[in-house]
Length: 427
Image (tube, rainbow, N blue to C red):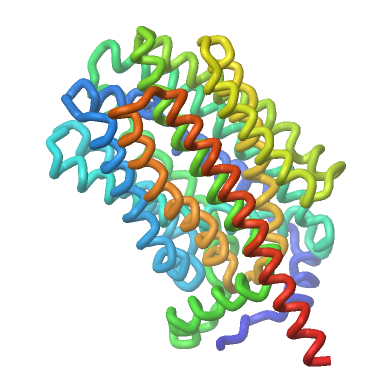
């Protein structure tokens, strides 16, 4: 295993002695994130595919292709980010994002499968690299004050997420109106936004985004790097639990987010109205994201995370109830609150417990678990809608959330007990 050029203590002293323009770097990071979150296609892509004759089940298979490609690419891209540079990983995310969007302009099945596969690979390059860069930036905010880094990170991550949500609101709203003018306009604008997002990334210095290595020959072998990352997670029940519960909750929320577009469309809402509803959901998420740092200071993680799971379950139950008002309330309030609070909580805890050398890889395990859950959940959801109502399929989702949460808790408890017994035997 290679050694870093500068030991952590010496690095902290060096940072404390030198002023860094970290605020300018942070602005560049915010600009990149905000531009990439201009999701002009987010509220209309499923409707766009449905208008070209694709059934919910076929759309589910396409989305499964996205998550399958993302899941397969998570580990290699996590290694890439840790060993070759996190900025390079984010640049590839932007470039591949532009390319895959353009394939939607020719919505034949082969091109769509290529598009979804490229999209999955692009998001794998985003994976842990994005949050790893932000964590590195927080170390320049107050060099030497390592104990406060998690608190600073949670605040900056919340700001990043709020700015991203504002961009999503703008993108989804404009996407709905652009789609009314011409169906392909949202996809063209999305490709342009992806290309523009690479410009702020070029302003980030190598010290923040590149691995701390002397020579390329000193980098560990990728398989050894993977082995070490797996060892870190396997020997930390806390990391294991965070990865499992995050993948479960995020996959349920994301699946509902996409299929609810078709539900509103079937209820007679116009594309522009659906875009506004999705923008309101983004505003709701923004408000709850702003509350996340305060909640993390006042509530223990072991209480806050189950509360998020219960919040999402409540939202799904409300969407099962008859009546558009209850469904909208469950979707716009409880579902948004669950994901908006859970995401920064899990991200902060993962970064706090992950070693710097394997940070992007550990974070990639979390996004990989999300993709693995989506590979199963998304096509099943689409298949269910071909023969059942939304209420019944939402009931299945609620059941999966309960069973998955209990299973995750039991796995973490068993692993924690095994490590405790092994430690006791060693003593």
